[in-house]
Length: 459
Ligand SMILES: *Cc1c(COP(=O)(O)O)cnc(C)c1O
Image (tube, rainbow, N blue to C red; front, side, top):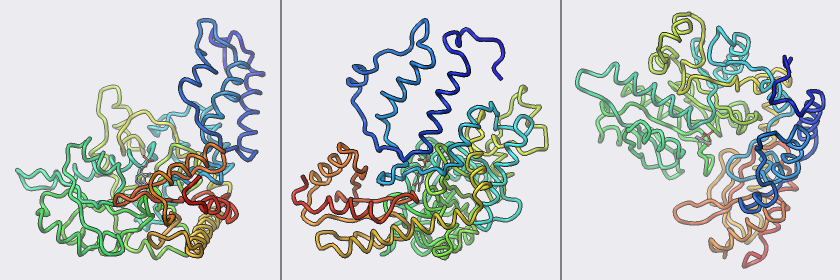
């Protein structure tokens, strides 16, 4: 309950404000969203202008500005024809519960302040740990995204390697592949670490054999982590995790698996074998805001041995002693950052409401639609699959199109609010790409979009 009427509320009575806000949220979750499209800054200045005034506009007007002017210029990433980057298609339960989390002023950094929230988040983390095959002692934290998740894991890996390195040695190299996500390069820059690239095999996967050569050339004592990707962002390729794990074990190296997108596929029995060997990882991430139907922003970060992460990440100060001296689980000790929203709760709530079988079924459904897209592309003479699909990313070319055609085609789809499918690039070639993680994306959507690629040059 809001206590005394704050000055900031003076133009707004609480019941009409909550009706406006809650009604909007309810409608947005209930109705099929329009795709929407961006405006330029000049257009927004023209239409919206300044909204922050000395006296305040009041709740009704502020909501009107958001609903009528701002929201329609933000793409609905849960639209069934939003197939760019990696979409975000939260379940109704997860989206609704995000409203509750927002209303609840929960501090998710410590057990002392957020016991029940931390307990519930840990149930969700444990479900993921079981999918991976991590032991009972594993644990971690929900971070804002895979970028912070990868960085946090790599910081823990380096601290661990340095703690056990012989005197005078300070391992500073991350080994990854060209298929690794851009956030690995970014982490290396933030950490002032070196990044060594392993060549991919003929199937574009990292393998133990290629990894061993690079490690021998570098000297294993220089390396503090090996990053394998379980579902690359551009192609959805899963590295050969079993052979990579074996080489990491051989050299005593920290094995990190980036499953930000593809990790959710662990819940799909039909493709589980692709992930064989993942159970040997020292750390793992998956973004529930990608293929696990949670709202932004949510990455699950897990460690085989959380004590190693705690040693690297716990912030110490007199005003924090009350937390750090306590034996309970403090999520903040496992990643970069101190204050945290209990961002795993919408995911936990949805898992609890729907049950895990619904998750497996929804993921299998998106795999079916991706399989259909692949077949449909092979069937059409003017289209060509670039690489066989592992998960739900499908990359293909329109024969005869140059880069300009792809961009014109994509711009036109968005201008019509028909679909959002941006081109990607690989080896200097512009290509078309679908990322299918939304269970609402249908075979009909795929057909409708592919039909727009008939004309040459693109309209
Ligand atoms: C999306 C992605 C990331 C980065 O995650 P954010 O949540 O966008 O920070 C890292 N790795 C892979 C493989 C990804 O697909």
